[in-house]
Amino acid sequence: MTATLIWILVALVAVGLYLSWTAGRLDRLHARIDAARAALDAQLLRRASVAQELATSGVLDPAASIVLYEAAHAARQAEEDQREVAESELSQALRAVFAETPQVEAVREAPGGEEAAHELTEAVRRVPMARRFHNDAVGAARRLREHRKVRWFRLAGHAPFPMAFEMDDEPPTALVERAA
Image (cartoon, rainbow, N blue to C red; front, side, top):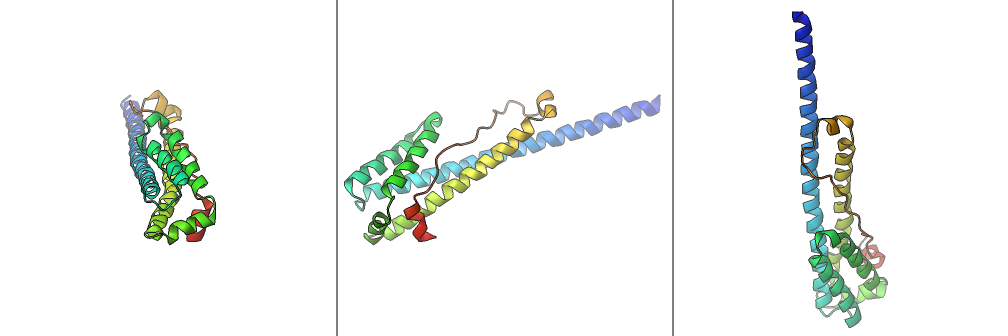
């Protein structure tokens, strides 16, 4: 009788430790998502700021400046539920403005244009990486949260279900091909 109680107690402690470890892992994944989202937000803000600065610098033709400025401004001011659409529109505006190599070369030849083009190139390269890191963390947390043990024992607590950030982040080829 005593041996049976000891084995039951050992089993309960083992299950408790396992569930505690799983809850800790899930908590670390949620912290990783928060850090990745902050990095993604920083990269998106940097890209929009550089695009807005370039649009107001007078280096681009007036039509391209207006298109780029409006898209960058909309991306910076977008509410959270409209953020993905606004960022996708900024990507499309960047591809439209920098669709051809002569436009990129004209920007680079203008005073201060080389630095601006380099900064924009770095910004548009970093956004897809930051988005990929964020979405990878979201995928890992989602896979763990789908396990029965996590649902049955409510190991996720009251944390909201993580959502991936889906947007068009294709960089303008004429802008990144020269830098590569």
